Amino acid sequence: MQDYNQDFMSRVFSVVTAWLPKGWGDAGRQLGILVGVDLIYELGRGLADHSRLDALHHGAQIIEFERATHTLFEPALQQFFLPARWLVEGTNYLYLNAQFSVALGFLIWLYLFRNESYYFVRNMFVVAMCLALIGYVGYPTAPPRMFPQDGFIDTMVKYSSLNHDSAIAKVFINPYAAVPSMHCAFALIIGVTGVAVCRRWWARAWWAFWPILIAWVVIVTGNHYWVDWALGWLVALAAFAIAKGALARWKPEAWDWRSPARRPGGTPQEVEA
Image 1 (cartoon, rainbow, N blue to C red):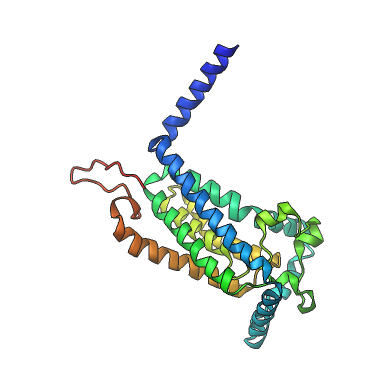
Image 2: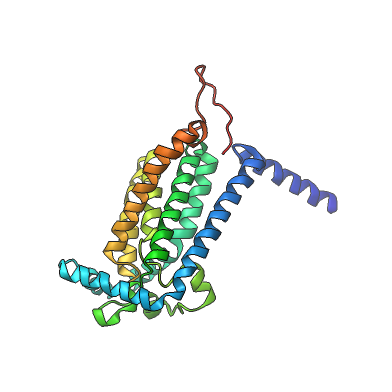
């Protein structure tokens, strides 16, 4: 029995190794980079938790700005969709999973099957998270769901009985990190990348729709203002510009959009990042 288990594990190890484009060393390095950056990101986001009064004040400022510019459409949009209970529950599910499950799954797929583009997209994610920390620390903002007096509804509490103060919820939801919306930033990065690297038309169509879908989700769930959504997209565009500019020039053989670079003879260079 022990020999069978060892043989089975050996076969599994061989299969997984064959799937890794650059071996276990590079896979471990990429995992370490993502985990390290995420720990810094979560630590920075956590600083905003201690600024409740400032966060509420900033949230009220955004509402007043939207009201003054006649663009406060979020409560009306919520009210339009609330009668469709199943649809609202779907938006809650997407909100909780889009930024982590979908984003992480997409990065894993990209690493395994479109490895030549992975490192550029990884850099975009890293830059976007660093840029977002500036907003979270410098301008902590309470999300719309904390302003029921202005017509906003917390769909997760009303339809999913979610306790925002629970330990599990805080893994996925930071109460005062509304500006910018990283759901929207990640969705735009993933969506544009998916359109660029996918080969089937239906896959490209789905990823083209993905940023729009997530922008709708963050509004309907009461977790972001349209300003957050717009700033999230601006963060994604800035991350692209930095990854394509300074970072790609710094290490073009590994960090450009299509790496590894090709020698004149057409053979891919094996590079590490």
